Image 1: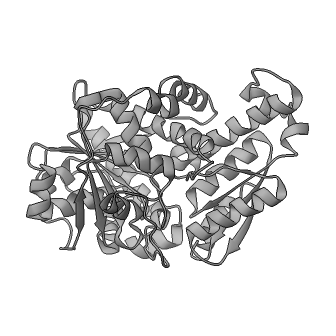
Image 2: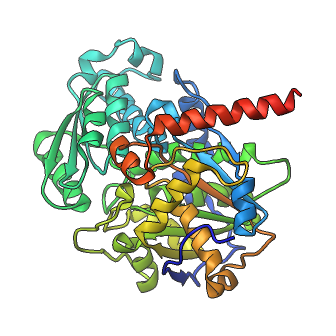
Length: 422
């Protein structure tokens, strides 16, 4: 069965990767070990925390001709609709507790004290800021609202009004500027320097790495959940993850590397063809910026310059880099909404499905199947990183709104319950 129409891909193998290379103390100090444990313990204590589902898409896997497709569905994370809720808000918390300790002399500041407004005299004088395509800014704004500081978010000219409204709903000031995402990153950094604000970015650059590390530690919780949800003793053979600036991909790569070592799965980064900064960086062997409008429906992946610390991780740990066109992503949204075979309908946004589109397209190309060692034995893990974070665009692409898809999913669960209890 061919699930997607034929579409071109580009594939680059990263010869730098050595599967036997140890994770190492430097990466552990940056992203794993005690720092990850602290992030996990903190985030899992927040009101509203719940483990998101890991779905076994048996119908889709059978249609694709592979053993298993596991889909980690982040569409319900903390009610924000995306995995980004794990990163930006946690980084805001870390920044605020550090500033409280520095300014007031307090020690071991408790999150419950921030929830209660105990340090509002300090946090109320702090402004956090960042650039966003939508989801990261929403998480930072939510974190600022939770923990009691001011927030200014920069969006570029292509960010939709609905995504802006979702950010503003948490009390953030949203400023739209001309240009693309990378232009917004530079403007946010410049205005923060002029005004004494604090940048809470998911991308890193020379001289700015600590906060993005905190963001990535939050993201790793999603991967940790997925490993615990897999059947005992079963690990994926392949992981396909969407790109963007690389923070998500690097967080997934790092956590799998730390936990599984030489048993870690083959790791493939997937990007829109018009915003393939990681692919181009891998091809050239050094950070390479992609210029232009970065036009793609995968708005959260429309980034032209890799994150420095993410790139360093991926250059050492990502086996392959891949680009896809927009239409396969749109078709994956429709496939998930309908369900294949007896799979449950799933609400997935346009940036959520790049990894899934990558595996389905790779299976259609003989050379890619051979190069990636894909076959009937393959067990693939993908991360559905967002739901309908732009409901209007979702309805336009899928042909019905997310409420109808969720209603169909509820009916599917009722049928499953009836079969089990018959």
